[in-house]
Image (tube, rainbow, N blue to C red; front, side, top):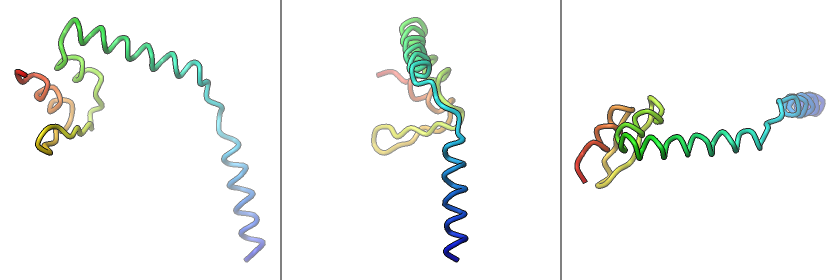
Length: 83
């Protein structure tokens, strides 16, 4: 049993170390560019269009009074309401 646990631990270590390295600087630039693009769309087309475009299709957002908005269409509907 001890030998099996040792083998599993070694395999786990090798698997974890075999993951490709992430280019942190590249990922950071991508996030910043996405945020800038979102801000531009928000200014040009409004919140409903920007959130609809950038939201995941399975998004769930908790809004006022513990209500939930489901999916891109739900988020678009929420932001389309007058303030």
